[in-house]
Length: 118
Image 1 (spheres, rainbow, N blue to C red):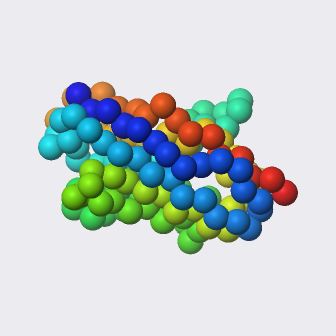
Image 2: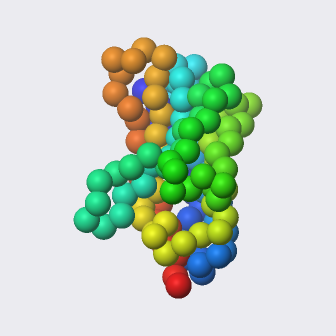
């Protein structure tokens, strides 16, 4: 079992920046990929960015060139640097972990609110 705890987030103005961090604990050896998802009011949860153990990254088209995901394997953390924020980035952001055993369900953090004002 893996526990994910997010930090960061908050309120920013359009064009500003925020940084999210997520610390993993527990059976971290079983993690294959870590990433960030977000859910805006009335919308489905969507992928923002993901980074695998091998260093591959994938981003939603809406955040490419603005957001950067990074992992610190020594500290068991994943970070999301968000620049050039837009009001449409407003959402609850969730840290997630996928496992080497694909049958294991994705683990989720508790979520952190990001609000971007125009």
